[in-house]
Structure formats: structure tokens, C-alpha cells
Image (tube, rainbow, N blue to C red; front, side, top):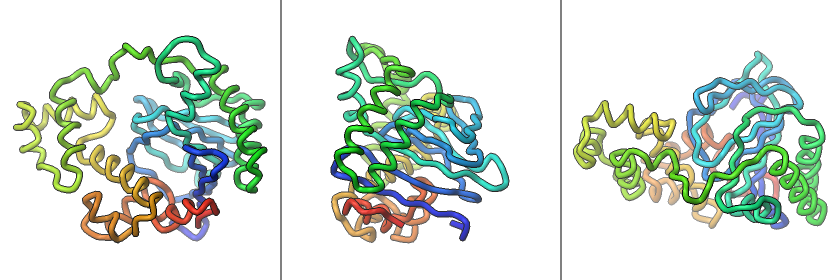
Length: 278
């Protein structure tokens, strides 16, 4: 990360299930990856570009980007000076709990639109983020729920509970994903994976990327980072986390973690003490 870049990652007990990020990036590039949470980003200055759902999006000042869980995306500067933004990563459980009070029916909330501009909603989310950074538990918890209620009411729809997830359509891809989940530390080669699901290697790679947005190796790294975040939150030392999720050593973990999350593992772990990270 260059000297012009800075990032702070933290959590607060007032918002269980929500990670928060405040950052400025210039040369940093997020690789294609996915989260097990939503990602709600407000660009304050500059422009971020990111590929998502087959389209390259540009998010400028005053924009609101809403990304759904488990959907692949990347991120990089859209102008030479980079971009600064604030991001909330609410868990599916957190968002679903608010949606249950607002939206009829069953199913997981999803956001069909990606980059929008609606000043009142952005201001609500920004106020919640500011209050969380300042340690005002009552204000942050109240404002965050009010902001997410406004966000859901304006932009969200529901994916019916009975509707199959796009990743569940191809049996070979579904089984390949299961194998990667089971063999996080000792993954197979693409040839072995293809044999295990009765497919040809290139055919599997193409079908896997079409279903998940990521090739198998990038999907595996996403799984490892998600697992690493949970272990770091539980207090597991980074050196142990590296081995537990399948990275060769702590430096290997740090390189992939920093590229994907935007802060090093140690800074992310310090966020678990409910103080700002690095």
C-alpha cells in the first residue's frame, strides 16, 4: 500500500454483525473476490471502478454502491488520484432482521441496482458510519438501523426462499464447490477436481466462472479469506490462521488478505477489540 493510501477497519458492539471500513486508495487494486456479507459503499471523493455482474461500474462522489453477498467483484481507481470511501459490511442476518420488519414475504433481501445516487440515503448511512467511528453506541445503532431501513425500502427486493441460487444450477459446479469447501487446506488440482465431478478441466473452469464469477483458484482464495477473517476475529494468531486456512505461511496470508480486505491481518484483528485498526 502506497504512502498516499490509508485504511481503518473496525467493529463496534453497538452493531453486531457489521464491519466498517474508512479508506483512501490510489494504486491498490482489489482482486476478484466475494464476501459472505453485503457491501454498502459511499464514495466521498475520486472515482472507484469495479466489475460486477458482467458490467464495469464507476462510482463517484455522492454515490452509493450496493453489492450482494457471494457475488464476485473487484475494485480499483477510476481516476489517477484514486478514491476515498466509507463502507459497511452488514451480515445477511443483520440485514434480514431489519427486512423482516419492513418487507412482506420470505427470502433474502437483494439489491438489483448497483450504483445509485440518492443524497438522503447516503447522508443517513454516512451519519451512522460517523457515529460508529466516534464510539457513540446509541447514535450508531439507531442511525444504522434507520439507514438500512431506508436503503431496503428504496432499493431492495427479495429473492424468494424457494428460488434456486444461481450457483446451484450446474451439478458439477455445485459438487466442485463442495469439494473446495471440504479441502480448504489441501485442495485438488484442476484435473483432479474435474475427474471428481465427471467433467473436463476447461469445461469445468468455464462453467465454474459462469456460475460463481470466479475461477476455482480465486474462489478457493475467497473461501480462505472469509475463514481467516472469522479466525482473526476469534483471536487466533495470524501465523496460526495462515496454516489453518491453507496458506503456506504468514507472509502468504498477509499478501492475499491485504489485497482482498484492504488492511493487513494484524490490523483487521485489532479491529476485534472495538477500536480502529491501522
